[in-house]
Image (cartoon, rainbow over all chains, first blue to last red; front, side):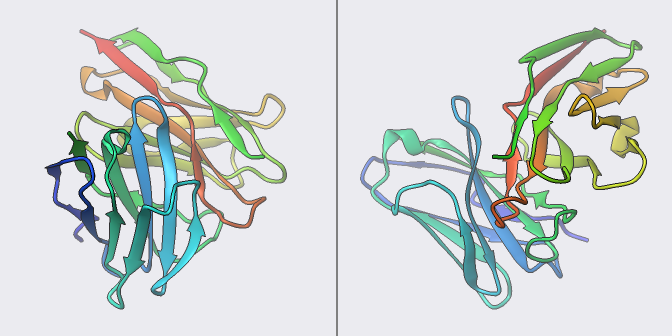
Length: 115
Length: 115
């Protein structure tokens, strides 16, 4: 069974540009969440999608947005990039939304460098 | 608010020796606790979780974790460390109180196993 697939793996963008990252969840998983990982802030929750609807959102500015498609694939977009957006962006999928014991499984991540 | 703490930034252990990576938690209600491992330039891999039941939880790659309610701890252990266990380890708690069920991660502990 294929794992969570994220594309692209590495990318370099210039300040002010925008970027779109893609995530394909494990087959059968309907919930997709996104996290930002930086050395200074650790792992920070961005948002979670289920059935094409954003269900939860972390404390990030409106420049960070996402969406989920009917096949559960998800994209996240960051507009007007800042140097501080340089990070590893991790996508995770799980079978369903909520459920305390529900385990999330991560992809390899997309490394974004803003110059 | 739900939180986890990993008091050690780095743990060094000799190959063949037992290892312990510490995690303490603060939750309202029942804790739902997880351990993940991250190898260099990779995403996070699920190791094990505690939902309810036995205080000793067994997981992948020979790892286990001991849940201790009185000490609010969930330490990760392995009887005999391998050099290949060297990685970054994250403890996480499921945020039940807010109704979002998002994961809250610790700051991570870098494990270095010396040959």
